[in-house]
Length: 316
Image (cartoon, rainbow, N blue to C red):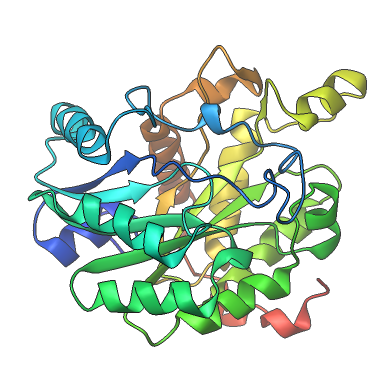
């Protein structure tokens, strides 16, 4: 556990690794997504509007170095950051030729304040040649791959037009493991059609993967998505703030205790966010409430993990 906290905190995960206050700076490498360009599908995942989760300073028209400079300035002012990782965040950042990927990654690593790469991607976009490239880079610097799991249930992945099944996540993790590459993941809780028990079981399933850190997002309905059209036509329930805090506390009790928690909620710009409106709260407010609730309960991350059924016991 992080000192004084009932859960493992990503801030300390990075600080312990780099011995300084380290933050990610977002980079747009100019990539697209196989679920948009027709490689896998069209239209993208039903909840996704890429504009809803990238920083204001990010503009793919700018050079990668310029994006990094702006990101460093922002993170220094907000958090007193001392060292930085280039976070390829927008779209699918392993969806291109190996040659172009290496060019973009090395352009980021050329900046003297960048200590490594964090690469956001999909499980179905990690073929062996790309993994080999990442393995090569990992011999030179810190390299983490963030896989968008979103749900561990195949019927949900089909409903949200994800374009792959959960087996693809397991296979991607197998290819990455043992090659010096760090693995993170994203998970969305609250997708219509899933139930609370399934969300708690998801903690057990992802704990069975070789991940070092996890981002837990609540479902947000944002403008310009298929999900927003569904919501307007047939509104479905979304979490209240207190419901979300309670769920995150329960979820973390079932989560493997060594996994660092990188996020406990999503965020979207006010002009794009439809529901829930409490999603406009700062991430720090959500973390503080979760921590206070866990301390009041006398609980901690992983307290139920040892007695949880293994992933194979769950019906996915």
